Image (tube, rainbow, N blue to C red):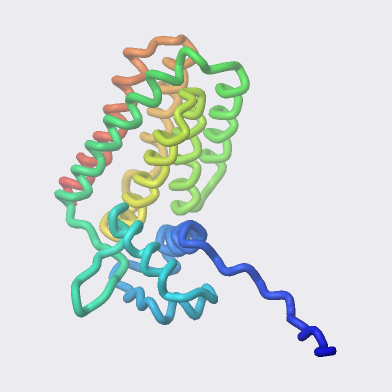
Length: 216
């Protein structure tokens, strides 16, 4: 009788979704900076997969604006021009204003407390990179009661995608004082259930980033 061959347990291969998420995180964290080549064979080896999920991941990240692909040259971490960033901020205004409008009627005391806690952490932080993360978390805390998971994911991906380019193009001369004052005003309008005022303040808040970019 033939002996049954002994097979070592193999680690499951990463899916295209997992490769996409991991590579996105590497780009947004700055581990892969703007202009860095993204070679399929190198990434496949790093993730322990074939080129197929890597190729799919690069296509998805290209659609998100994080990757540029040139035929016969390959893919690189994308750079965006100031006009492209201004347009992306216009899209942010539309998506986030809609999310906030839908969220306010569903907001509870716990949401307001969570937002206030983030503001306190923001005030106590001396790290501009941490400010960026806390800023996003503050906004998402206000938007989550909208109950639209896809809309929230679109907002998060867009904000992170813009963030890497803003860090490359713009100094932190805005600081945190003015944005924090704006956050407090937006939060108060949400607590007052004043949808129109909250949306107007939010639009002005995002448009301030456009003003800073135009001055670069």
